[in-house]
Image 1 (cartoon, one colour):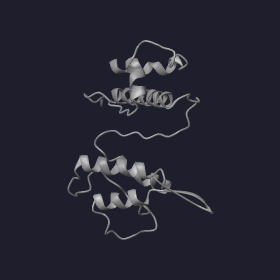
Image 2 (tube, helix red, strand yellow):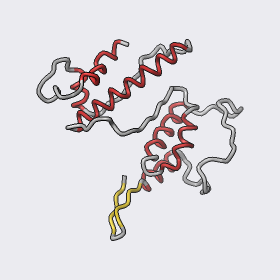
Image 3 (spheres, one colour):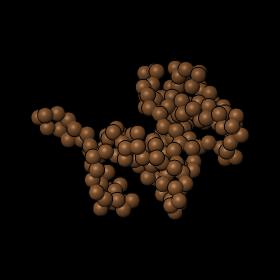
Amino acid sequence: MEISQSCEGIFLSQKRYAFNLLKRFKLDKCKVVATPLVVNEKLMKDDGEERADPKVYRSLIGNLLYLTASRPEIMLTVSLLSRYMQSIFSWSTKKQDIVAQSSAEGEYVAVASATNQAIWLRKILLELNLLPKEPTVICVDNKSAIAMAENLGQHGRTKHINIWFHTLRDAEKI
């Protein structure tokens, strides 16, 4: 994320990130278009073309999702494209219902919410007889949030966190 400040205001941009993304996926020579999606285009999982490498496709979609932070107009297109990935992908953004007293608590609450969503999705897949054999992996990069999830004992720094969020600890067994 690039931040620039002038007398007109503060501007956020991901210009360099977007350019590097285009270069990485060899799209930097493509023509510029006014809209990110062809109007009335019918997308199909099997359109007769050679199958894309799933790892590269997931990487592209993940990078594009990150780019939507500064380019919300591409969200619809990226979400449509994410439907054609081999692994299920869920994307959600909303304000948290609580005011976190630390970044660790904020991360912990977000992970608890993601875990609940994963459990809900797995129950739907179970009803459709499509339950994956592999466990659902939820990635967390906050060491304090990981420590809270792994530490079953309560201590002074985490006792204010609502019990409801601690269901995350039991989710590993589901």
